[in-house]
Image (cartoon, rainbow, N blue to C red; front, side, top):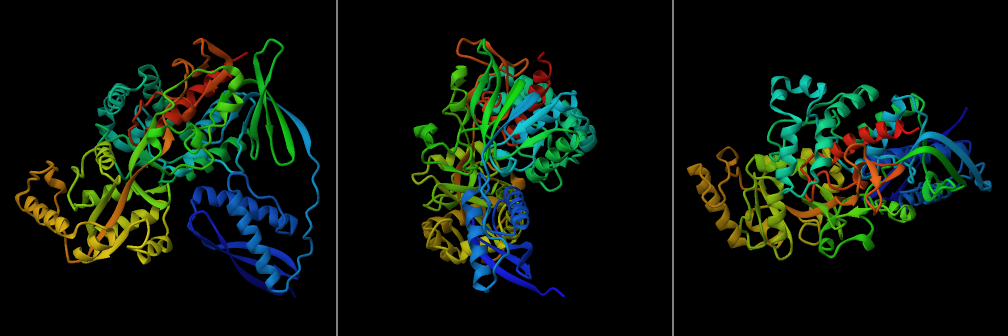
Length: 572
């Protein structure tokens, strides 16, 4: 009879300690189980599952790390090995066999570079049109920048939205969406691309919903930038649900996905026409031959060399793998770019490590709906808290330290906390921030008004004066300072206050390559379409201008991927 020995191990992850259990029997690894972690679920779930499979197969911790999560997976492997050895257990096979490097050739009608939202939709669309499709992703997991987003998107013009919103859906139209995009971007959008997005998102949502059996519902937050209710999301509110289900449907229906496959060079015909690309993996060089190529490789926010001077003081919350690789491997195609200094800057950032933020958008919106206010270091309000996000973003940028503070009561904190936990925070992580209150970032403080002001480094007398004035506005049901809608004027309840820091942050780059608005064909510097090459998602700039509305980057990814997938399928 086997005796099961359970060994606990801890590894340092990106966001905190990862606690896991190694189950062993007769010097064999039977299972690995995660007990606790604070990593981004969409990335961690994929990475750990893959790592676990490799460990169980090799019966060893001497396996490869996962591309895109190298530091975290090495920490897991090292700590697992150390914990097992500390128990005096010797694994049966601890020596990894040397794997010879090989070169393989893959042929497809359509090849997609990038496994984020845009790439997956493009690949699914091409597959649905009867094409043989291969998708390559440089990381050991799928999702790209999408994996850090919510799943919220607009459903304008879709049957899905008609079902969700009923008669309200008739208030929306592609023209109205186009108008909202133009207004909120201060007319910096590229109209023809915005039109393509607005006209195609309805069909794209209906297509991908049916293809991958996605069950959209009304988004819990309908942001004021949108003139009508049109935002929808998946039940989990997570983009991981989208990535997982769409990728699974793509593979189940015959599509091929190659992970750990990093494009480094291009293949061309004797005439110099693009005919595929060369990608490198840990043990394999893959030569992908394709009739057409869709570039959906994402943005360049994590590439410090590509960052503009004006963005240096803004926290980054995107994936560290958004390094703009295509700007290197596509150089010989002489592609036209524009507005590479455009970034989508949002408020609602909580700085979890220097220069790196996690978003609190859903929680912050709920808090302001319940009457919470934003103040600066002087304790003074800085904005109409219920206005559109861009007003708050700009108000933060005007502060000397570019930090604002969200002040709320215990009643509001309860709702705020629940939404933090729902969106990428853990209870342990949040408790850790409070344990460090007043000593280091991020600033989360709880207590009396005087106490939280001191812990957050806010002028106490200024904050007390602001709260008193604000209470007067509530009694009068008129905000004479910023004109806040009376429906959001709610008094603070009780004597316990919470203060949460709020910083501007960005993940998305809004400039990029130039694509033709009829078919998403990428243009060269002579403004001519490059034969057999199409773009989708963040890699193509302009549709949302220099300041996209909430939900619109997902909207662009899905709509542009849908169009690019069809266009690439029509190449002979």
